[in-house]
Image (tube, rainbow, N blue to C red; front, side):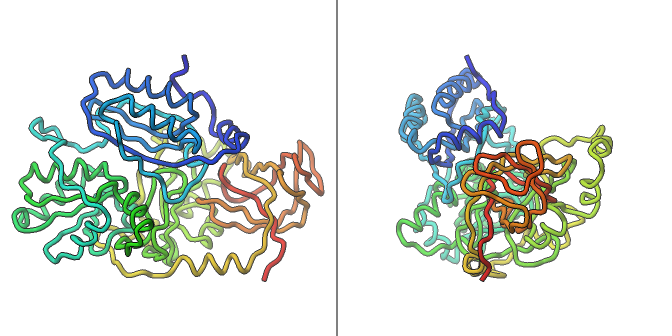
Length: 453
């Protein structure tokens, strides 16, 4: 009986490619009393593994919190696995705005003490006594009321790239920090103000709204389904977006564009930019905003120290990390003295640039043809591995390597190794490698540049 993931990310990506099916990225949550979270967890794994559902899921005695990737043709079967449990009958599934077949490459279900770490140990606190849920248009209407205070209950690196107009954006690194800060800040407004709150998918506000009602706030409201559901509704109903910029998401895409406004800056040069990346130094993995120019110059690193580190022999890098806690730090930092243009806390609503203009120019300027896909990156030797699927590739060709996190990187092929040896031209079906100064990901595509305008 398989109860845990047994495939590597590379193996899972290959299976997704071979299946040739579209997948849906979605999220959902539910607060409920679960007597045996371990048994519940194992039941879910067996049901979802059989459907090739992937994702990151937390279960606890208080409920479930899930972000997942599900084969599109198994969507109804997946919903049926939820309907087995009374507390998930008719549950809302927040489907992502931007779809990516590689958003999750493992099925990981963990038992936790809580599905959202809130730092609360008050037994009189009732999480089910929550605020009033508002749909998109209702949220917009209340947002325009001068008697309303709107609060973003996400982390600083989320709100920096996108938030609702006029929102309070606490300078916090996790949800539990924001509760006492906002409670103290709004003590004088418990009786006469509308407290309006939002987060990514609704789960943090579900708990926050109950907490503030418990603290004595009279008029508490929350955005139903969070920014994800809000975006779906404004697109379907033609409602003007009061959210500006990008919605940060916790998978490898790192963001879904809601409007074409760029409201943040590259943390290294200050240029308008809202693309997050993780530092290429395996001892750092700092989450920060980096433009394409800095990405190329700094080789995906957050500082000159990390840049120097990744050029050291691998054995020396390992020695430098010895004794340090360098596990999975993705999404856990977001701040460093090396980042000169990092903004947190009191953020502006004023756009610095428009994202659409740049994308249109790129499409006009470059004509490209798909060659293949990324399979692996060997960080020790800085070698990228690709599979040639559509057209041959030769030494001297100019190529684009494109992906949600990688962006668009242009390089000229100076040498190719195909099937273990050097060659001038690689053919369809060949597995090739060549040196690259930046990391590639499994979702990255390899294009040949045919013509520059």
